[in-house]
Length: 154
Image (cartoon, rainbow, N blue to C red; front, side):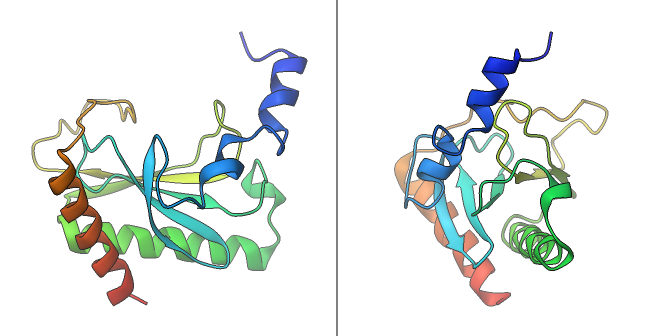
């Protein structure tokens, strides 16, 4: 059963939105800031069950692609594409999946979800795979490599 009207109203309220509250922070419970643009925040997800898993979060609190005008839509997808290219360069996945969902966190964002040689291509994509939390030094190295790839594409 879908969210009740009251639950949905809380989820879409920008004053209560977790992404509005912490997408810009250097670190939060779920991810670490890679870069920010005029349009988005690009974040490395802490659960690295799929090495390079990143999320691109719209700065403005909107809940759906349909709410963006043509220029905003283009800028959003440019940032998503650049994030995908950075992940590709840094982690050499076989394929990258791009997932825009938002039924649990209705703040427009795109999961940049790499698939690697060891992943089962017949398994449904599951952003909760793992979890695989890297030791601090390895996570820092992963972040540095991704940031370098991001900036090299700028």
